[in-house]
Amino acid sequence: MSLHLQFDHIGIPVDSPQAAEFWVPDSECWVTNPRTHPQRIEYLRFKTIPELEVGSPEWKLWHMPHIAWRVDDLETAIADEEVVFGPFAPSDFGRVVFIHKHGAIIEYLEYTDLTRWFGAPTPWEPV
Image (tube, rainbow, N blue to C red; front, side, top):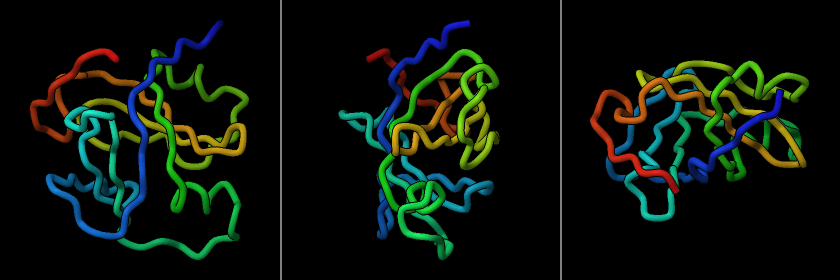
């Protein structure tokens, strides 16, 4: 079965609070809504960052940007992949997982509702 990927956003870790952040209990971080950013940027601010081996996939998850793709089936998307974190449901809109591929962190999102982001109505348009 082939995997259909659709671009969703770029996630960038930051150290300072951002406007309109949403709390994600599973990853203990605040995130912004990438659908409200003109370049589809999501900012992530972690409550605490674990000490990890520099350059490891887990270290990259906490310190490096990631690219996020929408997928129709999360299980199919992660088959034979190096899962770094998840899968989990950060909120009411679906499930996510982070993998390590081609030296980078990739997020796959399986949306159940594209009209909501952490309980709030949100704009959505295909890119």
